[in-house]
Amino acid sequence: VKEEFFLPGSYESARKVGSSVRLVISDGFNFPESVQWYPSSSDPNFWNDKSAQKKAYDDLIAANEKAIRAQTLAEWVPAAKLVENGNTTTLPHACGDFSKVNAPARLGTVSVVTLDLTHPGTIGRSSIIAEPGEIYASENNLYISTRHWWWWPAPGQKDTTYFHKFDISQPASANYVASGTVDGYIQDQFSMDENAAGFFRVATTIQSRVADLSNPMNWWGRLETTNRVTVLGENNGSLDVVGQSAEFTKGERIMSARFVDDKGFVVTFRQVDPLVTFDMKDPTKPTKIGELTIPGFSTYIHPIDADHLLTIGTFVPPPGPNGTTDWRARSLQLQIFDVSDMAAPRQTHVQFVGTAYGWSEAASEHKAFNYFPAKKLLAIPFADWNSSWTTSSGTSYWSSFTSDLRVFSVDTVNGFTPKGAISVNDQFQHENYWGWSYYWTPNIRRSVMADDFVYAISDVGIRVANIADLSKPLVTTNFQRTTDDGSGTTP
Image 1 (cartoon, rainbow, N blue to C red):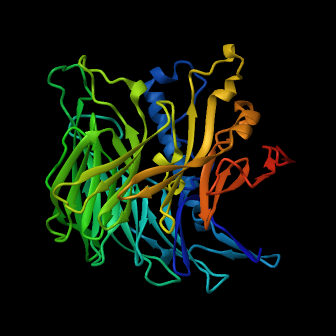
Image 2 (cartoon, rainbow, N blue to C red):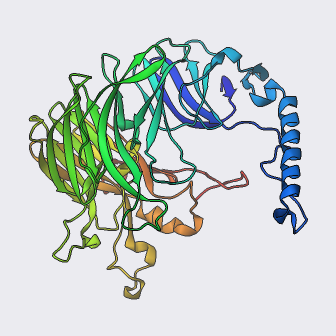
Image 3 (cartoon, rainbow, N blue to C red):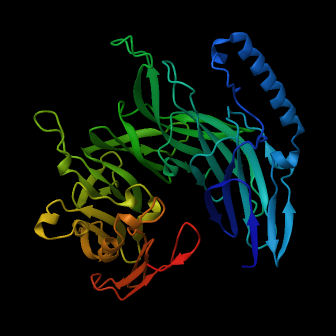
């Protein structure tokens, strides 16, 4: 280790562009420890005595203000530290590194920290008063979303998201430049995008709370949902709306989105899965072009080439004659879409994976979705449970579970071809749930594909096999597991 930076706050996300790493860090307001939010009293009649309550609140307000004013700037804004060659250097947060945004904010800070790998020993920080949300970065700009927070549900409210833009074109710094507001909320980072001209595109689901006229006792009202694509442009410190699409697929919500050059793709869901295509050439007129409705929904969209999309999601069968859906017919599914004709997108290939109990982290975390274009291979971690295997048949309960890395050949003409799987069932059964925790499981989490070799990575260790025969692992390396008290134990 050559040098270490210690930064106050919590890690949210990071992006690397060229030689520069940007970390997004959030921190709450560092109030003095003595600050209290409401008075306390051992008198059982206190909460019935209005005059006593008023005096207690007045006294508390005075005490809080005294403690707040007495706290030093260094205590409000803790410094970073650099440890290098055994020496510690304090790096205070300069006042000029803070910017005021033009959007409502709750008490807390978000900082974009720049580490220029070509100039070690230095960091740059730019901070705003805001809460963190999803992060998106282009080559020149980084955007942080902040969802509006309502204190209490009531008719008349509408979802709102604030976006904060930072200029990261200089390798050693990130400078706050603008903020903007869009109706609705985003699904994930892929709901945001910046095109080559610098326009910011975003797909949102808009929930509006309206009065429930059929049930006046429902004080919270009911929710109406619609969706929209919005384009923003920077204008003198503000991100202004320059174009919006018409509302689409009302009553549904966005499950996934992707912008590719001058094209936009959005999947919404309620009972069926519309894939909606958009022409994004004119930033002032994002226009819906086509729509394909099929059962289920996609949660991640991956462009294969200019004319094809690869997706992962869930197959949901159409409702039966009685209006109900058989959940046992659900399953994880992979799909290929032909979008060469944006006005008429087509589902060309489908691959069902596992049973209704099946699950893949790749469906909710794109880092677990591993498409290797050089070999046209897709690897996804997968777990399932076979309900036909029971302990009464002589098979242990944990033998009913499957945990492996599924690999598929992906071809836009021939579709999906299963190539096999690297199983970790032995480790899964050995550990079972007694040794699991929220941060440690034997399930496969990630994968790496290199030449003809496929690596399956779990919290337990790494297992590698040749693509020619994934059922025969070549090497398995277990990690040394660290217990909560810091001592190391080998599984």
